[in-house]
Structures are given as C-alpha cells and as structure tokens.
Amino acid sequence: MTKIRIPAMDIARRHPLYLKGTTDAAYARFASDLAELMEKLNIEEFKGDNLRELAIVLTMYYEDMISDLGIWNALTDSFQELYGRQLPFYDVDMQNYYRNEPNVEDIRFLIWLLMTRTEPSAVVSPDTPALEAAARTACSLMDKRFEDMPVNEELKEFFTKAEFAQNFYAQLDLMKWSYFACYASCNENAPMLIRQQAQRLSFSLNCPPPIAVNVAESIAMFENRLQPLAMRSQDWLARIVRNNGNAEAADKIASQRYLPFDFYLITDAVKGESMTFESLRGEKFTLSDHGLSHPQPECYDSKSAMAFFVEYDGEFYIGSQGSWSNNTEAFDTEKKARKHNTTLCIDNRRKLIEENSGSPLFYFNNADMLRLFLTDRVGLPKKTVSQLTLPQEEMDFTVFVRESDFNVVYFPNVARLICDPRNPLYDTEYAKANTFGNIFMLPGDMLRYLHEHDMLPEARINCFGGEEEGKKIVKDNFDFFARMMQGSAY
Image (cartoon, rainbow, N blue to C red):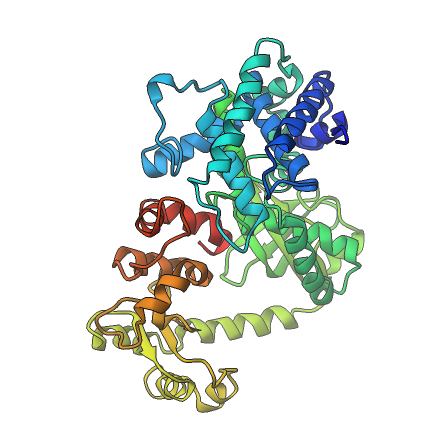
C-alpha cells in the first residue's frame, strides 16, 4: 500500500487568501494519517482524489474546532435558525454535544455532504453504514490527538480582526474563498460554472477570456448561492466574522447591496474624479475614481457601460471590469424592451389563476394542447408560440403561473409526478421511481408550492431503512434538500 502524503500547501490552499501558517505542517500530517485510516475502510466512493479530498475536508473541520474559527458553527447556527435542530437527518444529544470540539454527528454529516457532492447522480442515504464507520474512525483519531494539535493563531486573528472588511475588494476575495475553497460551503462544480459563464461573457463583452473569467467570478459571488443552504456569500462570510466577535465588520459585509450586471447609462462624468450612472430602473448613483478602480481616462468619455456595482459601507464600487460604450443604443433598446415585458398580459395571467379555482397549475398531455393554451388563454402571439421548441414525443407538460410576476413557466414530464385532484396525468408507480430525481430542476417557487400542498407524496431516496424511511427522510428534510440541490434556483 502506497503511503498517502498530503503536503502543507494543500492545507494552506483551503485558507482564505491561501494564508500560510506555522501550523500547516501539523495539520498536513494529520490529514495524511487520516487518509490512510480511511483507505483501510475500503469505502467505494472514496478512492484516489476523493479520498484525499475527504481527508482534507475533515482536517479543515478539525482545525476549525481546535482554533475556534467559527466556520462550522456558522453552518450549525443556520440549521438551528431554519429548522430548530443542529443538523439535518441526525438527532444530536445536546447534553453531550460540544460546540468547539469534534463531534461524530458533525463528521457524519460532513462525509455525507462530500459523498453527495462527489456523486451528483444520486443522493447518498444518510443512514448508509459506511458513513457511520467512517465518522467514528475519524472522530476517534481526532479525540486521540486533540490535546496535541496546535491552534492556528494567525487564522483566528485574521477572522477576529477582519481587517479585510475595511476594503470592498479585499472582502470580495474572502467571498470568493467561501465559494471556491471553504470546506463547509465550497461548490465542487464552481470552476465549471465559472468557465461556462465566462464563455458567455467573453462573447457579450467582446473581451479576452482571462478578463471574462475575472468578471464571471465576481458576479458569481452575488448571483450564485453557496451549498448546502443556498446562502449568499456575503451572509455566510458575515456569520463567520460574527462568530469571531466582530459584529461591526459582520454588519458591514452583510449589508452590501448588489446592482446586477446590466446596461447602465452614464449621466455625468468628471475625468479622474467621479462618474454618475443610471440603471434601467431609473436609480442614479455616483462612484468616485477609487470606486471605479481607477479606469482608463477614455472611460470617462463613455455614454454607457455594461457592468455591475455594489454599494458597500455607504459607497458604490464597480464589481469588476466592465464594457464601455460611446453611445446609449444598447441601454435604450433594453429599457424599451423591459418596459414592454413587465406590463405584458399581467391581467390575463392573474385571471388565469382565478378561473382555475385559485390554482397556478395546469396540465396538458401533449405539445399541441400546450400551444393552444399559450395562445388562447395566456395571450402569447401565435408566431411566438409556433417558434417554441416543444418535443412532440413528450408525454405531458405542466404549466405554473408564478406568483412573483404572474409569468408562466412550463416543463415536460412533470405532471406524472404531481398528485393533484385536478391532474389526470398523475402516475403513482412512475412517481415512486422518478420524483426525487426530477423535481429539483423546477424553479424554487414552484417546488415550494408543490411541497406545501403535499403534491409530491412519492418523493423518496433509496434508503437502508426501506421505502417508508426514505420518504420520511425527504419529507422531514425537504427544504434542506431543495436548498442544497437547487442552489441559486432555490
């Protein structure tokens, strides 16, 4: 058996800003020893890189507990606020649960979370015996070495002082750490998501790929949500800072306001000093040259821009590089289009729900019926509907009228999953096999409506405790599953 070595650099990479510390070598040795113990358990899901990742994640949790960094506690505090319990799935004996020491229930959940993230095609059952064995093995080693492991004083001071909160761009880097590297919140798919977004931005901004990647990363901090609770990066970072006793910095981070990546009109500019923008919704705000990150002089001659902005601690900042234009054509065209879209058929859509016994759900057993509904009932132009790509072979379509804007969304192959007295297409046997694997592609408001009205009774996961236990796990933890699996769509 090859001896597993995890270098100190792999520990530092998980710290904010790759913060190296004098304790990194000690935690790297612990991670290496833990990986070797875990390898002996021969858990199928943890081989090769997955085994190394497991050891590193559990080691970062261990460092957090020993150094009182407040990261894990930020997560369990959120669980407590949302669900009135310390963790999903597992009953925690609070009499014997120690907030700043390793707990087997914490470790079991962390392993479950990592297994589920690395096997996205199927959610691992929380009662998998291998989870219990791995958690107890890790906890035993942690307990054995607890008194000998060093406190990471540098990292503790970093979070306690939170000097990064004094600078917008510095705290933005910390938000990126929470998204890409923090053991309790990072998204394993983040690099792929950023690459996809960067490709789209590179085309729309006509900018080199490295710049597009930088823009995409910054936008993601405000538009993407962190696993496993679909939290905003700023709220997650604020919780960690607050757990380290710095309420002032935490409030500052949590209160920042995002103005989305969009077209903005430049209404006034003083070269080298300031620039005033107007959003498509008519909001005006002014940035200093510092808030604009000291742009090239020619930017002050521009008439409009495509960018995003953040209001932080009373000042506005440009979030990353933008695209500057010497005319207002794109801004004017987009403003006109959105004004039309926000008033289109709202009364018709409100009437739809009233005439449907107050239900926002409609069911159709073929594409032709859906097209007829969209033209005759919703009021969409026939030309628009004729251009929709609606595969004829799909067995059913479900329409949901959104409460937020009375817009309509529709999905194929969902009606068979929805137990609704008004739905003749519901198929119990099909729902048993397919509900859990398909419902999380739906928008959050639709999914919550279905759950609140008990329309997904066959939602279950494969469970060692049997079918009924699988249904109970999903029912008791439905909101958690939705947050984790939907993320930004929650």
